Length: 68
Image 1: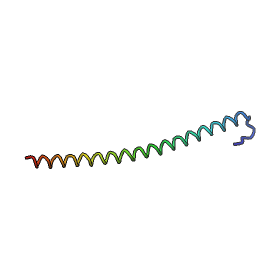
Image 2 (image 1 turned 90 degrees about the horizontal axis):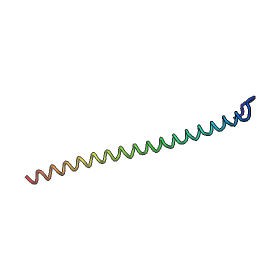
Image 3 (image 1 turned 180 degrees about the vertical axis):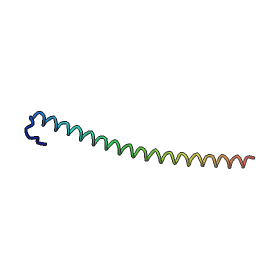
Image 4 (image 1 turned 45 degrees about the vertical axis):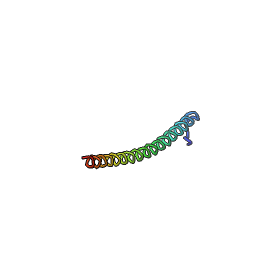
């Protein structure tokens, strides 16, 4: 980025700041994708856990009925 009538060191600082900003944005986007994937896995795990608990309760009830 060329800024007319601005000292070179200021242009250099602006370029460095833009680079750091872009790097941070990219890192944040990558982290967001990882968090979305983690949430998806957690929701799947939670659903499976609930199904497992329901099946365990059903089996327990059936065993209780057979035992009585």
